[in-house]
Image (tube, rainbow, N blue to C red; front, side, top):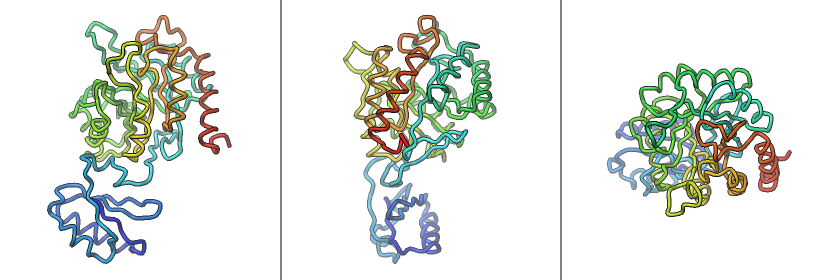
Length: 340
């Protein structure tokens, strides 16, 4: 349920209404839109008579929210959420960012790759220190040593790092290392204990869509995180599993505008995992940019044929340079101020 307040509602009256709602055992979330002030009511709304609420002097109207996701819902929060990822890098609300780097942290080549992607215009560095793999015998990542290498790259280049967390027991390690953005991968998109644990932090979370997950399931996963108090959630479309076998996954580009319509959270697209092949990454990165994504996550490796994981979908640094140039052209076409 949401209460849309009258334009002349003063601060003390709003505060009084919030207190009244909270005394009824519900959470009250105040959101200032462009033209109106909204209070979102989360909890057992049967405790409140909507007609009584609507009769209050400062309330313009009351509207029920039928979708099960509340805090992630644009009806609760009409304006776009902007997530601060550190080092002055913000995403959402017109702020566009590119996250780039190798699939896995492998060693000293990380810093070479990081320097190249930053020079090309990437604003965040990605790299997996912990790798969820289908086979238990495949490379599982460097663990804490990989996190340390990412932190060293961050210290030199002054750019936020994005890396995957797989286990609720590792959250404190990530906090101790001051990881800027914790990524929840597709295989953990419905690992509810993990979602709730990262929700207890204020660290930005890059939440990937499950490989067979619906859009509503992605939003409900975000709701798990937000229900614990962490509103710094970035949604990521990375392709879904369908009957098609010519690509690694099917890139559901529809999800970008649909998520923007349903939710106020930033939306990132991952054309690398979506397609699985280097040759398809550039066209889908450009398409996602044109579709209005708030950012891209792209895998880059200096020697893809010898990458420890997912080399088949990685761009070389030279390829990435060219893709970034084309992305900027698309951005200037759809957002004129991007070229200012």
